[in-house]
Image (cartoon, rainbow, N blue to C red; front, side, top):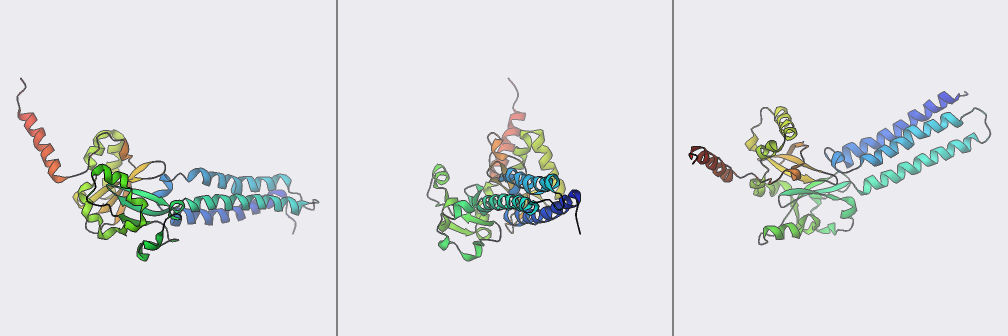
Length: 271
């Protein structure tokens, strides 16, 4: 059967789209599951791959294809080779930068990428939390208690795999460091809208049963939402918590003191 250029280009498009679609599924659902695709700056590479493999390749076939043309197989082979090289190169970058561990380290979560992990001695990490190819693993980076707050920040436990522990067994010790959604909502109308949307998604969940922590990605911060009783992630909020001035962590005692201060100020007559 002889194909015309439109049929050949369409066939090329279907094959390319199928291959790229399978690859994108691996990226979205295994290597960069939500919310990591949106915070790890993979979009640019994905756009280039899509342009070369799904747009440019079939378009070149449409331009050069002519049934019976001398050297046609060589031309098509060159196009296919360019597509394969682009896919392999892009996939290698995306794979090497994929989230490997999501480590809680003194008040916030950090992404430890595969490019960082390959220089670490992972032999000290419990096999239960070192899944390697199964997507990112959440871990608790144990920070020495004797350090000052500044020392805990400088210690960077998230880069020390020998201090990795299973998250569920340790995170409850740090629930008092949860972000205060009310402070975040007061910062801007956009924040309030995002928080209202989050609350609408979970109408039957009491907010005091949840904990909220910043997650630092390559291009932005967001907030991960955990249940306090099981330390499991149930959602995330696309608020850049680091842009909120004087952002404090939730503490019931401090919150009560703040309310008492506000009430005293209202009762104090203006002189």
